[in-house]
Image 1 (cartoon, rainbow, N blue to C red):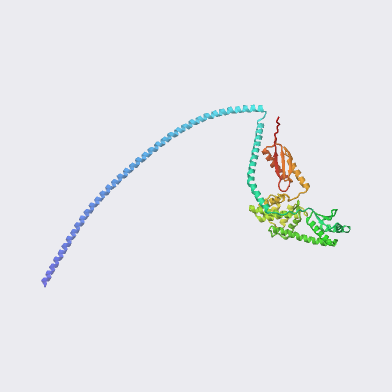
Image 2: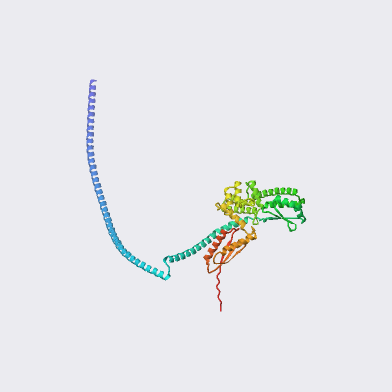
Length: 507
């Protein structure tokens, strides 16, 4: 047992020694391998260093060559630029020299020109002296003659330009204006009621005249006192004439007298009763006429008192034209024109209707119908645009609004168209005479004729004193004078006739 243990112990010892030797040999192998690896690594490191050094030297050499190449190229570019600069400098020096030469030449020419100018000045002075001696005119007199000739030439050119511009303007503006006005006038057709300052009442027989006069004239005195109208009873058969400047009072008297004649009972008490009833009827009719006029113009906010004043125009005439009908026509035309031109239609129509409102009271109150119309419009709080249109429709003030201008145009159209108004013979003849006097005051006018009821004046001039431009100027001057110095409805056409006749006899 002990031997076996010993053997086992020895065996284990041998095994342990063997293992230790094996491990020692293994470690020695590993150490040798490591040493060999280190040697290889060092050799590789040395090789890498050599390769890197070689690569670096090649890179440095390539960069050096590259830099040398760039330096050579830049030197070449600098040499080229230096050559160009040198060439330009040479060219500049040549130009400078040329300029110097030219300046010297110009200086010489300038000296020559100064010498020539001095020579010419002397020559001009001699010529001027000779011309003064020959013509007998001083320089100032000659200059004045030349200026007058230039002014005359400029005046002719100015008239030519004016005529050309007028023709161009008329081609565009006149056609459009005529179109608008004709459209407005065609759409507005109002009958004219013509009255005068007297009214005639028909009687059934001449015996009625005595009853109207009454015992000792008491009936006629009562009627004239109550109505303020003159009754003219003359030899006119079966008629009595009522005369008064106030158309409303004349209408009241006419209505009262017609009722008295129809009733047959004529005495002061009955006259007073009938006159009072007639006043009420006329007042009612005046209000109705005012309301109808406002309604026709589509104006619904006029005060009742203003409607009464407006209705009085139904009995008012101007140059034979019924003023209320005229006011309606002006309102309608002004409204149509405003619609065509894009203006305020309501303002234009209202101003047109009220533009002659002052004529309702101008026969009983002091002032022109324009002043009274403005006063009435302000009293009833009309708008400033309406008041301005009333004030400006006869150019008492300048029309500052398009509606005021349209009312003025519509008023001229309504009053100026043929047959709208009737002048008295005396006024008519006076106007024609005034037109011819204005025309005949111009030098070179042989004859003048006012024709077409004073709406056109024809002027015959001496042909040797007037050319086309002078004729145009005469027509314009005459038209301006007529417009400035005269008052007339509508417009007056001025026509200048220049005739030249050449006559020879054949033998």
